[in-house]
Length: 75
Length: 490
Ligand code: SF4
Image (cartoon, rainbow over all chains, first blue to last red; front, side):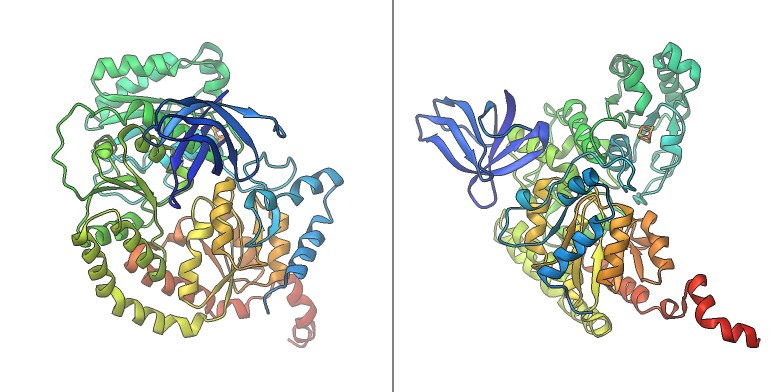
């Protein structure tokens, strides 16, 4: 589990930031992105996948959440 | 020399890598790349990794990133280099962060404060000494607004509790005393030091005035990540003020503690050096809802773009203000370009610097008709290269944490007309007869930001590149060969 920050980037897309590794990347898909449910699995441009428990509302961005890295190569 | 093709550049990288032992070669391969607009930066270049033992690297340490870069320029605070004397003394005043104030009275930028650790302090701990040092500072320099304790390597190794000492001192003097855990061994370069310094500001400074009244205006902004090298922040600030914005804070060149504390009251954070201060900008965005925008004040094209981009966050008065500023300086910029472009047109530049410069200055060179054919960062992360790939021409060279050997070989083969890098590279290239600008502290010149800065930038590049000295300079060993008959005749 690691803290990640999600914000809206200049291009309007969601962007992902992992402070511990100073890793920034675009989010290409987010599992739930509706007014009632927001979160779940997200996929980054580099292909890696992360998961965080969905929230019940659309939060004000940026927001820091605890997320888990799913599968993929680990470094 | 004509620009290299993709194949030639790839071959060049291979050729340079050839001398390394197998393992080193494998590692360094990942840090050298041919720019490709189509590729994902992460796939094509690896960054922010530990330097290879045995090679010459140009990197600094976390302490350098925190004390030297982020905290050091805050002029009304005293920054204690906590540990042995060398770390602070050898880096003292090296960055030319200009400031106004009377040094030693109400400003302390060029001074070196250190706890000067001796063996005894390592064995028995240095907390008492630190407390005493803070007492002395209060007595000798009562106009300081706060103190930061910048840890050098031994502090983390012997497990001193600088947090406790700082808290006690804060209570005793009613001043901000910030412990910073930026021991040099943390991380792979100065980059982690920036991050640690940002986190310390977040934890000890940013919220200090949350409850205080502040007479704000709708046009309040803060300059984040401008270190006022040679006056850079000043030549940026006047443009922002001319377009109608109110600059509440400068981080951290010519900056003060109060400015940092007031920053959460602004409407927009203007981020120049993304690498060293994106952290605090992200924090303020999340906690206070303050958006941040990256900008680039090198060269008229980028200044113009940036002024317009900044203006989009505000109403029409500011948008008009931006146009007014652009129009006002147009004639001056045209004159600068008319004068210098013919002297510099088509010249090739190779850069190797840190922070934002390897990509930010490209536009300024292009305004002068020059081309950047190779660039690289000392301590960048992947997101920096993402931003760089777009700025550089296809098939140009990218090198991350380049080694002394690689850089020399690249320069020998690519034969640029100008190299821009640091003091450690300067004399090697100058002796090779290659025009060189020291691009960390602007070679004791500057400012280079903004419109005024560009005029100086253009003059400096011309002065260096077209200096007749390069042609007359032959290294002694070569001179012996060619000039032998002459010498014999004499
Ligand atoms: S690595 Fe450690 S000892 Fe060296 S300059 Fe940095 S803090 Fe000082």
